Amino acid sequence: MSPRSQRAAIRRVGAPAEPIASGDDTQARVLTAASELFAAHGFARTTIREIAERAGVNVAAGHYHFGSKRELYLAVARAQFDTLDARIASANADVEEGALDGLSRAALGALLGRRIHAMLAFLLGPPPSPHGAIMLGELSHPTDALPVIVREYVRPQQQRVVAIIARLAPSLDARAIQQCCFSIVSQVFFQRLMLPAMPDLMGVAALPRDHVRRTAEHITAFALAAITGLERASRAARAPTPARENRKR
Image 1 (cartoon, one colour):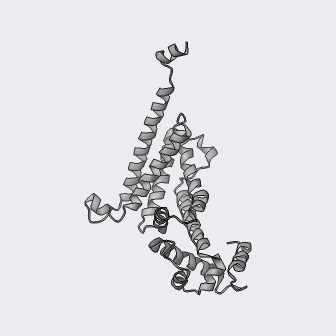
Image 2 (cartoon, rainbow, N blue to C red; image 1 turned 180 degrees about the horizontal axis):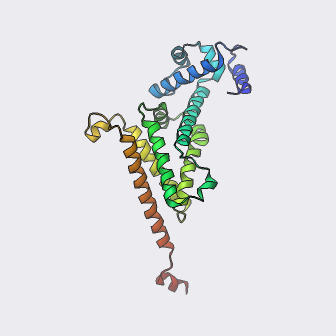
Image 3 (tube, rainbow, N blue to C red; image 1 turned 30 degrees about the vertical axis):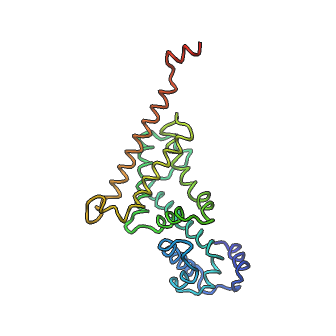
């Protein structure tokens, strides 16, 4: 939070003019505690007092750094998406959109696979990140923060996947490309949603150590096959046929 934002937060909640505890360390502890509690209990059932107690700070310190529970919730979402971005970047799965045009089809598929793997590894762990639980909770019981989360954090992630798909299937229209993106993300989030039940569904005592890798490979192969099929169907639908040529005459 910038000094200007901190000052604005102080004016909003009437917090003291000086920090209650040491700056960055307190802020980090509050964010960590808030992430854990929002993931476990959701936004509505988590209080600032509970967050402060877990962080080992007083309530005024939380207000000083974040201003309100909603702003703290958004700060948690931002931190989680920042961590996801860092994971994706470290996996070499984030390429500037302009550079995508120079990649071969195989390179685009590999890029999509690395991105899917990074997303799954972040969501499933071990240990699972708070991000998945927070997002699933937000989607099940939306707060007024959801439009902000979608606009500022979810949509940029979506646009990066859409950009890859658009290069893989240039004949698809924007709607079809968007649906492909939704299909990929839904498979990833299904794995997080069903994580507690997944060992039973697979008939094993615990998830295999290579579960994330093998699942990422399957989702990638499934997605690439579907995208290729849709691309071929789209081209075939646009190709001239004798019947179409006759109608034109």
